[in-house]
Length: 229
Ligand SMILES: [Zn+2]
Image (cartoon, rainbow, N blue to C red; front, side):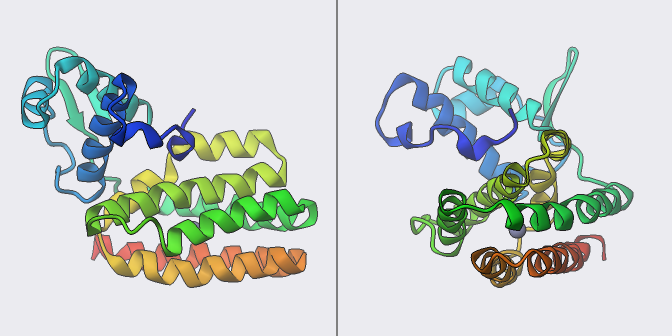
């Protein structure tokens, strides 16, 4: 399942064995999202293990998980490398797909919204605007990307079409789009747009929800287009 933010994240500081994988995953993930690890760069397991001062097992597990998310690739005899950056065509295709699916899903979600669902979305929107004061810009950005993915997935879940939800999840849209451009403007403006979506949900206004989602995705496309200029 692609929804990485739903996974248990609280263990990283507790020293439990499973949390080593989490921690290794997070540190590679953040460096991929911030482009500190360049698209296409090799990811030698032994080197990463040495740099992070862990054994190779958690590195292997973390890379395998990142592979299922499409952020790294594994080639026979070569090993892992960071996935290449999306082309402009892939970028445009992804946004066309989002515009086909998400405004309609927001409309349906507004019609099916209940208090529990609204509270979950509210918590995510709140997490994106404040977070738990992540230590640095890199963490903040990668965390935003992850929570945004869950926020949009939750709306698809509430909308109720499992086929559509699965199709979006399979694209790992947010991971690829956020990796295009490491910039605070990407996150700041999105917060205002999310608030417009939430406002429509609170009022149970399906037309406004559809409109606000279309606006958010269209503006998001404009922001990220900078990566190709
Ligand atoms: Zn968003």
